Image (cartoon, rainbow, N blue to C red; front, side):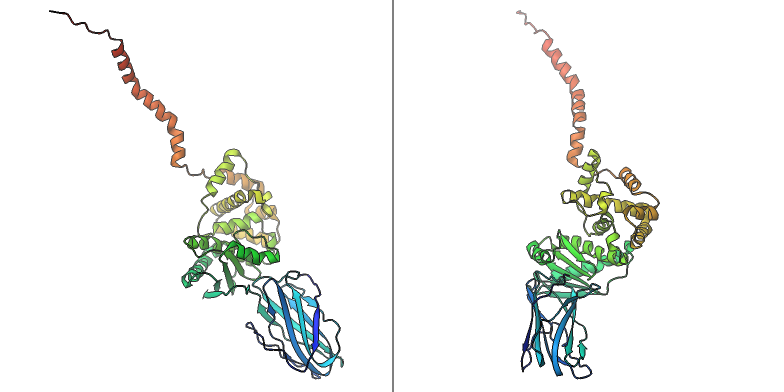
Length: 413
């Protein structure tokens, strides 16, 4: 998060701040030796993607000369906003506000913050860290929990949310057969009702969005599924897919960026509750034209112009690895990448063959795409024509003979 220093407004007053919503956070109240006291530090108020304001009321025996707000969004180094100079006083009300468009916070993640207050006697008070959930407060979310999974949605009835929770909890055991990772203590699934709504949420933090997004570090899955007749089908695709990314992150032990895209996305697609019906045709066309994408090109981000084939190949290769090497092969690959191996060396060390050889073996064993009835009819059409000609030949000869027979003359008696 950029360390941009917004304007800090310090106002001297003889009264406490007005009461504000605590957003599931207890007030920060602390005292330091010498008498610095924080009487109120409620959870911040914000408009999602707009602006945010943190407030503090503090007093001391000596005049307070500075107040500094620290914010940590999960990184190693907290972002810091220093207070602007202000007239020291024994009691102060401080407000730090900034533009979330210029200083974005990760959506739906816990935001930790604390204050450091210094008075003219040289005493310092650091408040205990507090946190709040930076949720999209443009909507009124409903929630339902099942085990470690909590589903949030704002459009649809209770059965819609329960269906999503059931899909999530039933998918976890299946995914962990291949991705052996500790299950997250908490997994939050946020379901937007429209693509536009989710784009407006994720676009504010520069997240490229296709059909869903996972923030594995936060244990958050964000998808777009409308509560319509296709809801069950779409939930079965998107929820297990994004959950797989979360578990891969946990298995990668800090080296998630090392996991090749073909392996990461292939595992996620393989664990979808519904298979993409377009993939067999895409693979068949690539095989017939010898236009497969090389696995070395699929180690990094997919080319948007070839994304469908990239996903189809990735899933097919991962299925081949599991069929040939079993779940142990999948686990060895994950262990290699968790250890810091690059794309090709990870395959070599865990499966005993090069990336190019893996691709060659996969292509050789790629099952032909199922032949449709129409394709079969087109292939057999010449044989049907030949058989018809053979069967009609005797009748054609007989008809010709009849036509060549001279007409019978009738003799008058």
